[in-house]
Image 1 (tube, one colour):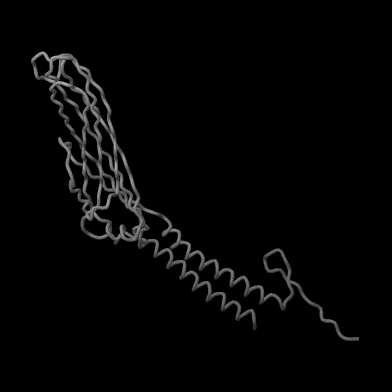
Image 2 (cartoon, helix red, strand yellow):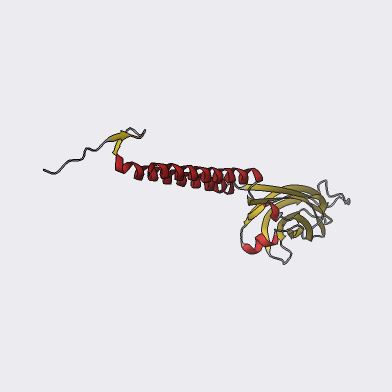
Length: 260
């Protein structure tokens, strides 16, 4: 009868038991898992940091002035490429002001007048490409009696009325061409235009109609970017890789002793 070999069983701290000849294979498997976890930990430190988006915000304002204007230059600080990789540029434009209608009738009869005002506001690039377009229309009607001989835009033969406005528009730029334009150590030139047109109907007799436009603007530019990892982050990743190396050496020594 052939001789039977009695297998011995020993626990290795996992709550399970394996034969003697399977112990080394399991230790090798555990070692590989530890190595994989160490590598994954180091990579997650860097990947986790790169996923943290950061923002940089610049705000500009223009003083309130009278009258329409075209291509008013606004200089914007470019994004510093040393901070990281620029991903998008957010621009918000707010234009506030007032439009005032003045009229005075010189005729001898009563009359009515309708004044249609339209605001057209654009923010353009240096090459004339519109980034933000804002529009607003005002339609107002007035009545007056015959002229009293005065010229004061008031009384029974005239009137003045002011209409405030607050227009807000925004856009997000993320094309390669736009990101290159806003990246650097200099300035980006944008141009703001505020135009007003007016049409009148009425007053068979002679009348004087005037408009006054006052406006100011504020501009907010938001740079969204992926930051460059700081020194502490690189140090943490390096420490993880060093731990990986030391752990690997200890596993090799242990396995070599266990295989003897």
